[in-house]
Image (tube, rainbow, N blue to C red; front, side):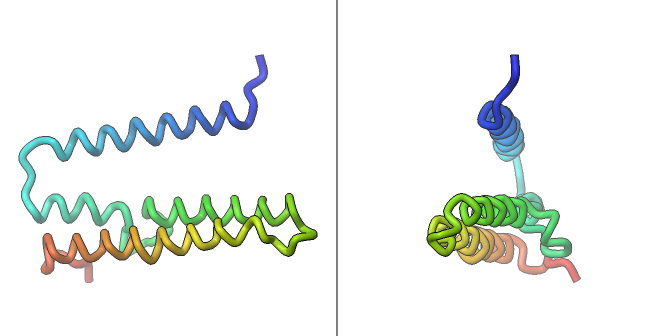
Length: 112
């Protein structure tokens, strides 16, 4: 049986959900502010942003926007605009707010 693209994406999304559940389970035990800040820093990985979860999500949305632009080229990429906006929101909102949260939890722990 041949798996479709959507089947492969669903399987990959399931793996992501399992990974996030594992992180959530790690947060269920005793944890101090500094350790929590270090865990949250992994989502936006200040030193190497391309390694962070948020940057990976932004990259995925950017690729989707490019694909949308190829689907509707006569409409000047109209379908891609919301995807580019979503990518910007991940960076501007989720990424920035997580950064602020890590600073609040452990202001001295910022990497040099």
